[in-house]
Amino acid sequence: MKTKALKKDKVNVVTLGCSKNLVDSENIITQLQGNGVDVEHEQAQQDANVVIVNTCGFIENAKQESIETILQWSEAKGEGEIDKLYVTGCLSQRYREDLEKEIPEVDAWFGTLELPLLLEKFNADYKHELVGERVTTTASHFAYLKIAEGCDRPCSFCAIPLMRGKHVSRPIEELVKEAQSLARRGVKELMLIAQDLTFYGLDLYKKRELGNLLRQLSDVEGIEWIRLHYAYPAGFPMDAIEAMAERDNICNYLDIPLQHGSTDMLQRMRRGITRERTEKLINEIRSIVPDIAIRTTLIAGHPGETEEEFEEMCQFVRDMKFDRLGVFAYSHEDNTHSGSMDDDVPEEVKEERVQKIMEIQQEIAFENNQRLVGQELKVLFDRKEGGYFIGRTEYDSPEVDNEVLVSAEETYIPIGEFQTVRITSAGDYDLFGELVK
Image (cartoon, rainbow, N blue to C red):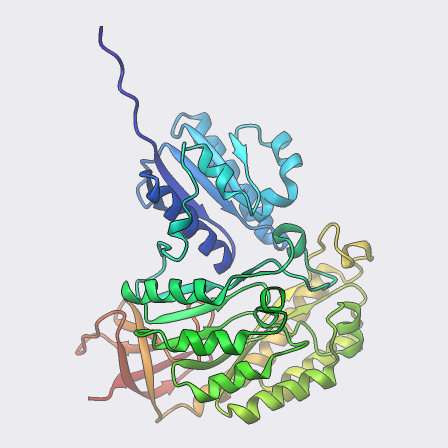
């Protein structure tokens, strides 16, 4: 009697949200591959029979995108295109009970810290020996390095602690080992990420250790750029900036979300800092590293934001002249302190305020870029698109910042390589240049 052979699972991992979520997906893939499971990330050609959706639950738009993606794969399952659908990540962590009732087609839901339970669905074990050996899904020459999980900050508008838990730092030796592994595989640029970089070390070492971590990562052979993302301004460890000034391979770049420019609003947001202290911090950072590029994010339309407070934020942007800036319309989040307030700024006003901030920043960005014309800059090239090779300077992170475009008509540039480029012209957000030979 013949028996029917069991088809081996093939898994497609779909990632939504931020770079921290991407690292989580990479860890899922690493563990599945380590257990002999055939797995890919966001397959171009769908032939997987199992899909894992790693969701984002940060703001309303992200939640909606996550739900739509789950429903899309639920429909695919109903039509027999896939056999199993699993959901993990922030949205699943926060709204699991409601989602289980509303989308019964999902086979299982998992929270942000339940990777071992997810692996059990594949008869797989969590392999501790794979920690530090993460598979990457980004371009081969750069990778994100998550140095901590969770957050202890009490920001009024943020639901991250509800989804990610308390701050937990990873040991320095573990991070160095992972950086060495990435470097051996050709990674040249590390982007350090966490909900809050500046809290790093307080739980493990009873003191802030970001500066020490930076110096040890800087010593890893093969790592040419190290970049800092998501630093909190209150209690900022200045030794991290001193390390930046000391080491050539720590990029003169800092992503420091400030959220507002009005002291009253910062107090309402529970940020633990004033506008005056914020300005003093930024000026001190710039005095140590004069050519640093500072990226920040702001929120427009938080409950209670008056026209006067918004104008204070506008003036703050004009005064500080940030190199990179993003602004979000406030999103009302359940179970947060702000969520208990009256969401009293109309949506159209929020959007108008977002637009006004971006118009102010556009002028600043254009002026900053014009100063680069004629300069020769070190550029790391990420891709070829259309008629251009496209790269970034040390002042720019992938996907969110400026890009440098060099014509591909008469020039060949290997992807993942550094080149010296003379900037010949500049727009609001893009730089154009030619190779220095």
